[in-house]
Image 1 (cartoon, protein in one colour):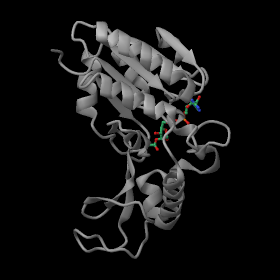
Image 2 (image 1 turned 120 degrees about the vertical axis):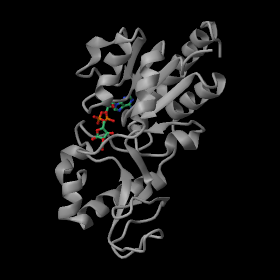
Image 3 (image 1 turned 30 degrees about the vertical axis):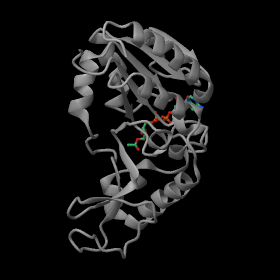
Image 4 (image 1 turned 135 degrees about the vertical axis):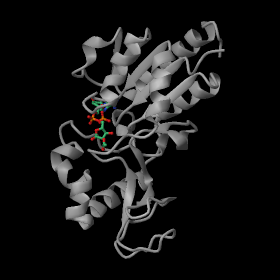
Length: 241
Ligand code: OAD
């Protein structure tokens, strides 16, 4: 028995890039075309809710068309093979991991959920966000926002994630630039606590040098062999999988 998952995986936008969902900071990334202060902060929503709803409606439309890729499927397989031993923490607001059969903690929320800015009620919703819709819980109109975490807001599931980082033996950072905190600090935290840490990314990142190992390439190509290797390592661990 362990105190938690043996392996903690952090994923970012690079995991879903080959499914056609844009990343944020690369050339042509979302934050090169939109000012995040306008569309990803509570202040931006207060200033111009329509602009924010339009931005997320476009992202919902992309996500409705997207499909999981081999990287999502590989992570789902790893979780199935090693039940209870693999925690996936994702910064991605898409549902492609779930559609591939994986379970993930969405620390930055979920695009296909709508939150009422007045009463905080959250509901599943794949359609367009509109100003006119009344909240089914409190009846107020005008408060519909995506249930995603904006800059200046607190990421979700932090106590669970922190506990897992303190106990895991392996940590993997997949398709994330590590530029956003607190997620950008998870690798260092896991390493300090004794985990072996690996980065899987198309390119080097600003935090690459802290990893014991780096694997370069597109997620859909490098994840399947890495998952196979991890299945072996976790099976050989004292707890098995
Ligand atoms: P970024 O856009 O910052 O970084 C994407 C990373 O994915 C880069 O390091 C790329 O090299 C890598 N990448 C791109 N294509 C890839 C591929 N096919 N295979 C493997 N890696 C690939 O996105 P995130 O790190 O996810 O937060 O950004 C973190 C947070 O910043 C997001 O969750 C979002 C954003 O602001 C909020 O909206 C709160």
